Image (cartoon, rainbow, N blue to C red; front, side, top):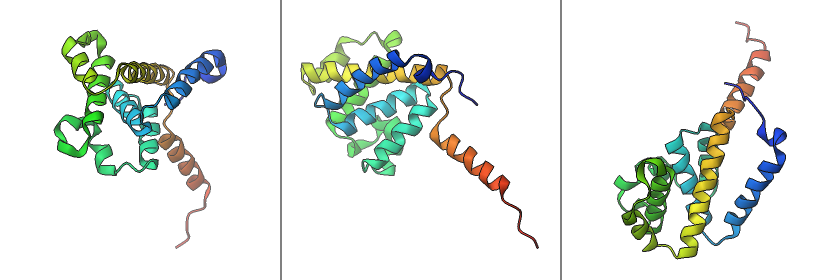
Length: 166
């Protein structure tokens, strides 16, 4: 798979605008790991390999255990591994990401509102919207995950090395 369009070069003003939202989310007061968990879950739902690779690396670098990371996609069945706040954020992320199917029902809003302040919920919803936008860009233009780039580079490096003589 190769990248179709490098939208960072063809539309730098648009990327800068998204970066402004990203900068806002980074300083809005929501826990960084919480936002990254949401980014990972939304990317799982959307099937964005590029963003899954990136947010997996980010969460591991922030100290999230590999087991908790593996259980993000089944967080509802993971018992107390996720905090109530994390569960509420993941649930809200799922219903907002699937808005065409869910229409974000009142019960989902009530559940999220029981955990988050109005400002936190608005900021969380902006973060969810942003990762959905990034997913759509990465999927549409075939951004290549770093792991695939690294593997490709390693393969090319190995191909250049002579085979050992027996």
